[in-house]
Length: 84
Image 1 (cartoon, rainbow, N blue to C red):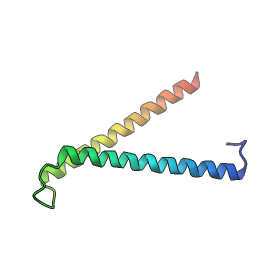
Image 2 (tube, one colour):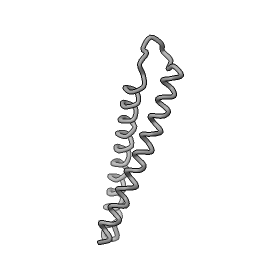
Image 3 (cartoon, one colour):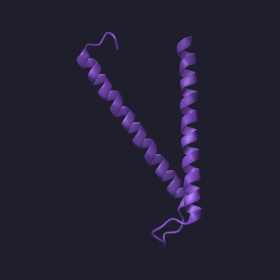
Image 4 (spheres, rainbow, N blue to C red):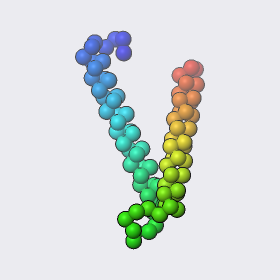
């Protein structure tokens, strides 16, 4: 980024921030869809049952841990690849 002028740096920063937001929203959407379809079974009540709430909490925790681990592995791979 040292070779970019201030305007180009600002534009690049905006593009990266927009991309990060899009990725976050995509991850949130995927999490919501997966956990809802896996855990919510009873549509006769407007509230979640205890079983559904527990399932969603476990599902979300598992999804986030998985996403974090994938990110770590990608960073490790990238560091190894860039180091060669």
